Image 1 (cartoon, helix red, strand yellow):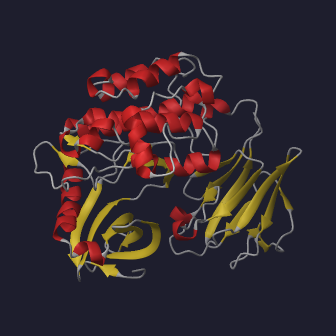
Image 2 (cartoon, one colour):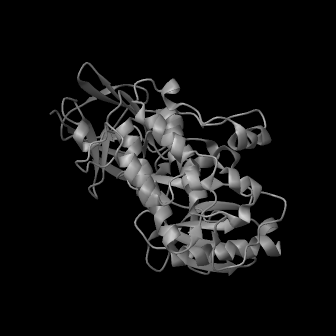
Image 3 (cartoon, helix red, strand yellow):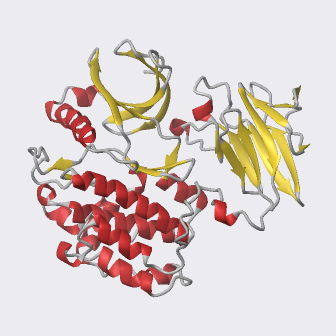
Length: 400
């Protein structure tokens, strides 16, 4: 599909993710030159009447929901048998990727992320929509720290018919609410809040609340196992976090938080959260309030986008989901034409000094206009310019 032109308008220029029913691409709108995410239903799924109907309903439900924490739809169409949804492109990664690559989040940051996620659930609930597949893979963390809810493929509305297959629950076993296992057609927002509680537990501990060798083992634990004690995995957390999860992961919906607003109020009351309004930073980066006392440097793009250099060793390049490549500094949104290599360069910090190393990229890394010799460290100084592929960056050494 790469290079394919849909609706004589949207050119697919890279692949971002692949599932059993659909593939998500980066697409360029040739009329406006804007970049979007384009979700394309597989041909096998497109010829299935039920699946294609569900895909179209996903766009219809998304079109009814508005809010800063839900990915906005742009267009829906069919081109030579390919059904597709065009959505706003989110510059960032999933919460799952953030935990897998960066480990558990600090409590303040985890609370901020989960409150934004709950705001996305609230936007859907306000329109009578239950997502039914809340999980870290469907929550996108942008470079500026904003969280957006996506993938409404399993969502249902209280105003439309349900096409769930009888006898099967929908959702993901690690995050599914007990009542969703018993009857996926009758769940409401409280099931989404249970799933959100599972996500919060994972953000804090790096583990899902219930695990098992087989999917049904996990499902049965959601139904019957005691609610896990979060402080057993994160001893520095105060007991109030256990109290929060006793309600968030209650087996019976009526024992849980009843609305996203109740969920957020309880999360906001947890100790250790700075209510000064500091937004949580993306994975591997520091929030503004965390800069003091750290020798924080940054790469700054020509459009003003800032890439804080908060780790001592960071790969700079472009992500490739299909190949499992996720550099710490992802320049793909700046370079859809792919002139930046997946692993283009390496930034390191040693004894207060900063270095860049070209990783034998096809388009050589240039420092102040001069090409670098591959695999040789070169020290960086404040104001130095770098060129990776067709991307220009300025190095800033910030010490506070």
